[in-house]
Amino acid sequence: MFDLERWQEIFETISKNKLRTFLTGLSVASGIFILVILLGIGEGMKHGIEKEFQSDAANVIYVYPGVTTKEYKGLNPGRSIQMKNEDYEFTKRENKDELELNSSIYRIWSGMVTYGKESGSYRVEGVYPDYQFLENSSMVQGRFLNHKDIQESTKIAVIGNRVKIDLFKDSDDVVGQYVEISGIKFQVVGVYTDPGGEREESRVFVPIKTAQKVFSGGNDVDLLSFTLEPKDTYEEALAASNSFTDKVETYLKGKHTVAPDDNSAIRVNNMLENTKRFYDLMGMIKMFFWGVGICTIIAGVVGVSNIMLIIVKERTREIGVRKALGAEPLSIIGMVLHESIFVTSFAGLTGLISGLILLDLAGPLIQTDFLYNPTVDFNVALSTVVILIVAGALAGFFPAYRAARIKPIVALRDE
Image (cartoon, rainbow, N blue to C red; front, top):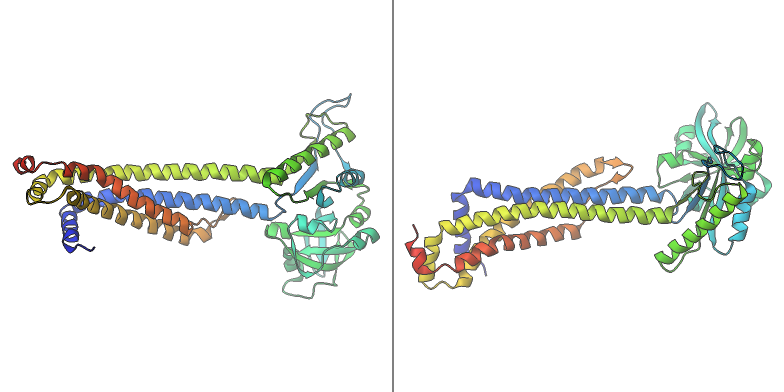
């Protein structure tokens, strides 16, 4: 029930101690503001990591060759490992029941691509048809490579949207046109887009056998990529993924005479395992942010509690009169709690709204690799409101309880 006299008392008390109330409220507002900003940064880091992972399939496994760092079976360290077509074929054949998608990749890091008077240096990759889904790419024009292109070693190319803009400008007449890659003509059959952005769209895909033939690649491959069949649970998927990577590592190290503990010669990047690590890390970071924010709020609440103790002390005589006139202890507790919750909630909401406004204005301007669009969702905002109410009640409870225990005769003698 709305009590006008109670509200008048609260505002009268605040008006008598404007500076004290302002400084107390500022500490609470600062705590909520810091909490909201920290949680927004945590959410932005999560969005950034999700954006990075969107560029590839979530469960993709990459296998790279490297350089040996250990002597093994009479061979010196420092050998460069070169994977071959048979490494890919053997792995695919031996694990055919487990694999969902697979492709080997042959790369030309700086292929000069020319159309008319326009040209640019782009990464050219010889791949299999599955690579579109391994890279999480979508076609915006035409088609991707198919198995017939691989078998016949056709000179066709799929270009990224960034390449299309650079070479063809605003023209949509792309499919069917011919571009030159390092002086060799390829017909464009499709244009793709990638959630990884322009960096991922600055590539040209060609059939791998074509790339190996026309760019003198022989049987060399630079990368193997796989995804496994889906499992019912994340734990099962992670276990199957780790088992597969162990088998691939063991085979390749044996095939290329690499020490079993030489992790630089054959490198495996398991995105599923990396995803778990990142999200575990994000969970710990968010818990840390919550801890810092809560501690800051507690500091503000302690300040409010101290102020309420001072107010109770100042109003001891008034409280004694109220009790002598028949005021119940719950009425006294309600009076103090009401003021405490109002001051804390008002200050906290001010900090909350300020934090949300700052994130709304500045968030879209922050576009880094691992911090993207920091925001705070409705559930988090609602949680902070609950925290405010609880904090206000805690801040006022002990002073209110002390006020309720004051004996009228003692209070009336107070100077």
